[in-house]
Length: 193
Image (cartoon, rainbow, N blue to C red; front, side, top):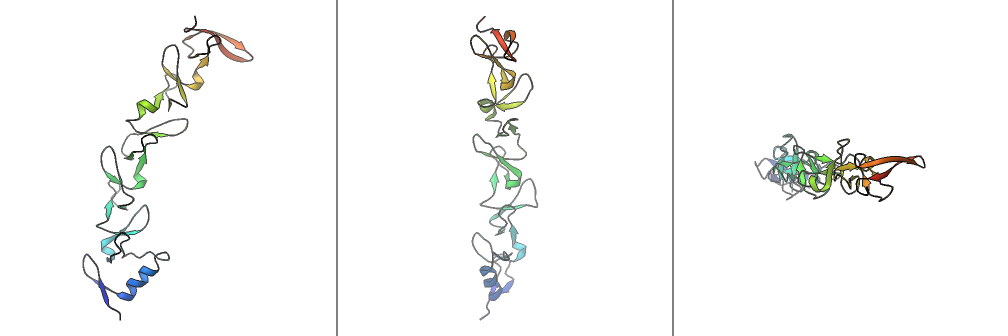
C-alpha cells in the first residue's frame, strides 16, 4: 500500500511512494528530505544542503558556518579552526602547508612570495623569513638564504658567492666586486678577508 511516513522532527506526512522514489533517484534529483547521514526522513524545514558536498543533512547532523551564517556544512566537511575553534565550511578555511592544521579565514596567514605555500603563525619562524633587502616573505630552505657574514636573511637573488671562499654573502659583507665573464662577482668578503 501507500503508507504514510512522517518527518522525524515535526511529524508531517509524505506518501511511502514519494519517499522511495526519493531514495531510488538521488543521483538525478537529490532528495531534499532524506538525511544522508542517517537516511531518516525530514521535511524541507528540517534539512539543509551542505555547501561543500551538496548533500542533504538534517539539522542534527549539520552545522552553520561561523563566518557565513547562510552556509550549512555537514559533519564530514566541517572544519574546526585550530586557533579560535570556530566551525567553518571549507570555503572559509585554509590549511597550513607545513603542520597541516586547519584555520578559519579570520586567522593570519603568511605565504611564500615564490611558491605560495600557506604557513600559519606558529610555523612561520621555522619556515619563512623576510628578506632584509626587499621585505618579501620566502621559504627559508628553498627561496632564501642567510648571509655567511652578517647572518641576516636575504632572497637568494640578493646574495653572491665570494670568489675566494665561495660563501654566500650580501653586498654589505662583500668587499670588492669585479666583473668575471660578464657577471658581478665578489672578489673578497668579510669571511676570507
